[in-house]
Length: 261
Picture 1 (tube, helix red, strand yellow):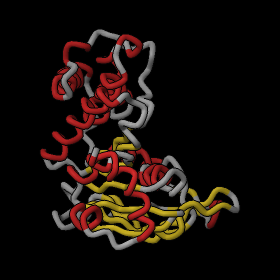
Picture 2 (cartoon, one colour):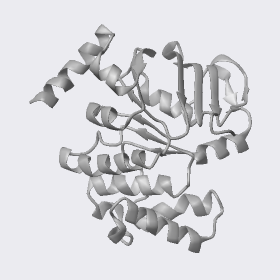
Picture 3 (tube, one colour):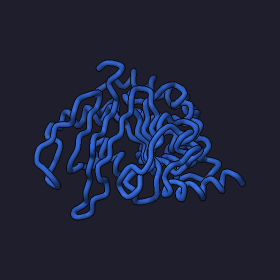
């Protein structure tokens, strides 16, 4: 892959649940070091699109390319499936996903949670993984919580542990699905700081978020989805500062009011 090859490319993607089409032909490109934020109302297709990128959901039409390599499919329409399990595993492990609800193993310590996938999925040596896991927990500010269990941590600390777990896979890109929406405002800021630090490092990220300040601060590109289609996209200054779409103006007006209070 050359530096000009996108890390993740979506071309004319369609996704349906039975008769209900929720993504209706979306194309997005994330180049190396890009931060792409997906915004829009509930039901606009943001989280579904992210899950299609990570092959947690099957799309019915269109292409997904990882570092220029297209996903190989068999079947068509609702019967379409990825046909190479090894390719799916390889791509999934390079597109680490951070979920809204943390998804930490309750019976494992925080350190064990972060180490689990590199050891069991990638087959790496536990000693090397432990050193890396401790470093990433330090990076997200909870290095002192290695021996704690998820129930002993706040929501913000659990989400930072989930980010450390994603980083420990050494992925090519990070996918965030509403990473702060389950948190109180004070805890939300802890996680936002980590995401901003990762953006400043030049990490490739795609973020589904309800936080317009976060999208404005960290993004190279903001994509506004409405009813499964891209209504508007562009740099944050253009999307938030000189909005073209009436629908986007309506969507942004409550958050603008909140920011101006």
